[in-house]
Length: 336
Image 1: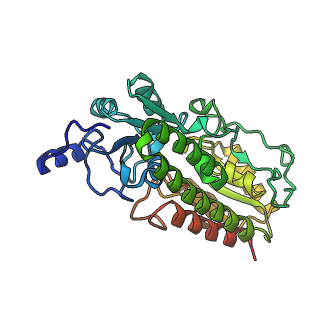
Image 2: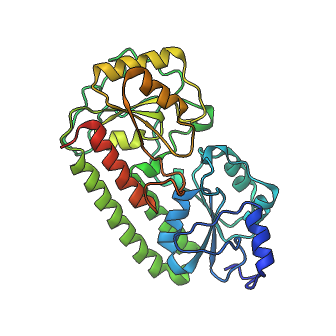
Image 3: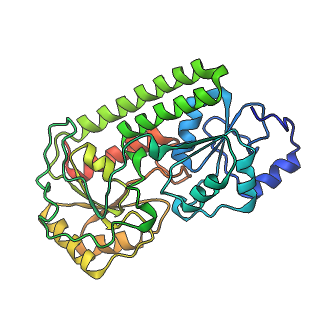
């Protein structure tokens, strides 16, 4: 492990924090940067990756997140100091295709263990419309199985930064579990002295994710509509898993502005499919979502893509926020 600097002064810690090295608070509360501890030092690109590293690594890892709490991950630009920081870590855990500056920095880094979550499960193409009720064992078949049922033409859905597929895999508990198992194997290989603990921690995490999957499956089983509207297309995997159809105002990139035609199309979809709610999220502007809701007489609510935990999040970790998402979806879809 990287043990070059076991002791750091309070002044040094403050300086590091000021330079923007966000550290996940789930298990490690200090703001020491990677390379400053006697543990297995992992640099994670943003919260869902940091959460996995913390849960799998437990007491044996020190996790530093490159994305600060409250920062929109898609907008992250890696600093020169953060690039240098990567070189001192034992491992980097990231999700290629979500944060271009992270992809570039890790690609150029000499770090020994590079774990790309996008390689640990199958990626799929999603755009402004996603889901279409593919069968995943939940017994539902969405009447929107044909892409052109509403005459949709996805002109915003494929941002060039996501040519490898939709990166939002952590919002499907089943895919997230697949990623966890891949991270476990990488940790065991890089740090064999603690392999048994990594394996045990991963087994517990996978059981928790299986339980979350079951909560979504049963909680959404009886509903009055399959269609939900979101501010950007983050929930394609979740929609497919549970037989839903996500209609997004913007595509995979939350900063993409919708066309007037897309807004009119969403207004028609909302009327035709019994949509009650337009969902927005905590880390990007809610202006467009609230404007659409106001124009169509719909409610608004939060559906959190769990890209970071802040004081505004409906929960303190991934599981709590995902359960809050389930509650919001049940209400919006008329689940009984």
